[in-house]
Image 1 (cartoon, one colour):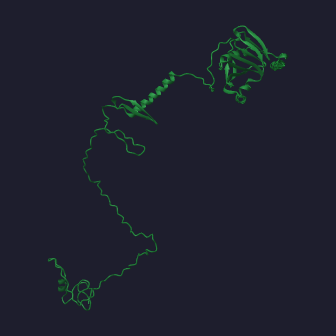
Image 2 (cartoon, one colour; image 1 turned 180 degrees about the vertical axis):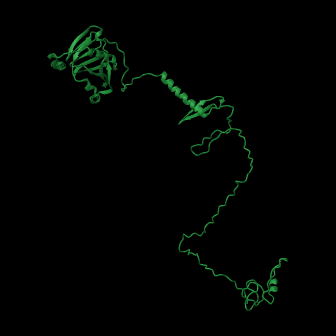
Image 3 (cartoon, helix red, strand yellow; image 1 turned 60 degrees about the horizontal axis):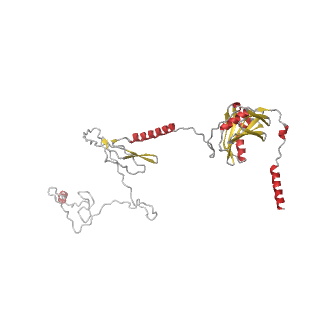
Length: 379
């Protein structure tokens, strides 16, 4: 037998539907009405249940309760949390067709704000809001300007605010003008020698060959004209000339050789002098009068020596050495030496007597005589 209300099968021992609770009788319509809720009275009708009525059977569909179950003992990496719900994006409302009239009042700026320079260390900028930037203000006593690692303080008075860019530009222009004016006013041409013991060149009055009477002497293959104001002698195949006051000395000697070979071997000449304990302070090629010269400013045992080479023609060169009592490189004396060398004449033959060396035994013999005197006095 089935229920009149829901057509569910009824128990043989009870006429009450286990599904909907309807009492099935002769007049199902009346029975159903008594079991329904009276909407007008808002009361619920309790179905009548007898003591012999069997418990209702629930129609529950069979479910696979083990579906999707994992063994939590098999792995420790199983997450105990489920997937987080994903929030669906909401579509923005289209307000393109909506006209909104919004009245926003912009506040007026009372005090302008200068550009704020952010610190390079990431810290907060320091803003001094207590000093007005418009109109006439009283400046501090000093203004600090920094160039690289140097800081300059400039005394300031009462004035209008000067932009920092203009202030820095003015200081730079001031320094540049100072350098230009200083270099113009104090400019001087200084010839610096590489030697610290070189004294200032002195001006010496000399007498040239063309100024008066001259003496002549032959040394080697050349005959030299020497002004009478000076004392001269022969030495080592050349002539040696002294001043009348004993302030300087010139030695001139002619040797076979070519000037061009010497001029192109200045490096070798310098190194050779150094190997022979001569300090070379300066070595250069210059011109005196019409003659080219290789000049060497050297020092031996604290004595400065001006050494020079020039062309003597006839496959010879003149070697010159000038020393002074004030230990200077005197180029006025070199001008006199150039005058004597220019007026020298070449001789094809040399007097044979000049090739015989002087055997100077004077010191040895005098020493021997003094020793003999001591022996005689002791006897």
